[in-house]
Image 1: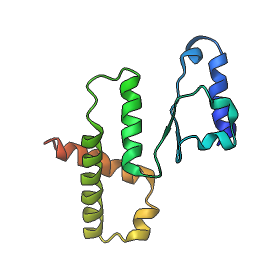
Image 2: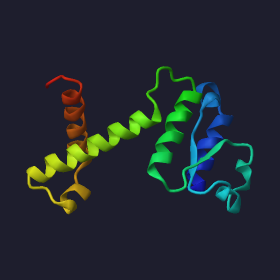
Image 3: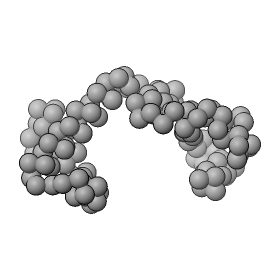
Image 4: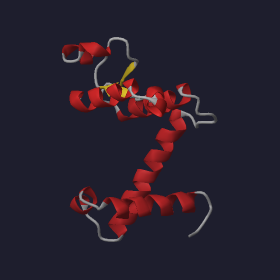
Amino acid sequence: MPFELGIDLGCRLGEGILQSKTCLILEKDKYDYQKAISDLSNSDIKSHNNDPETLVFQVRNWFAELGMENAPSATRIWKRFNEFMADFREAREKDGFKDRDLEFMPAPEYINFIKQWIAVSAGQTR
């Protein structure tokens, strides 16, 4: 996505709020970006080694670096995500959903399940 990234980074040359724009650049392998995009050498690029748990750590820590206070630990986020995924699959399978149904589930339906799961897991009901 070099083109989209270039547009995003170029927005920093604008005025007002655009000058404070930040973005997180993630890549599979450290320094892999140098093969195609040399202009990023002064950017703080995070690698995740194609490991979802490492990706969660990188994103969480980036938010903390930006000043997000009281962020839960990456370990906690990863644990909760896995709890959600297990509950999601179990609940959907009980409702007759198969892998293909879950793969092509419309985003609003998935988001609604997330909202319900959060409410229930927080001890609330809606």
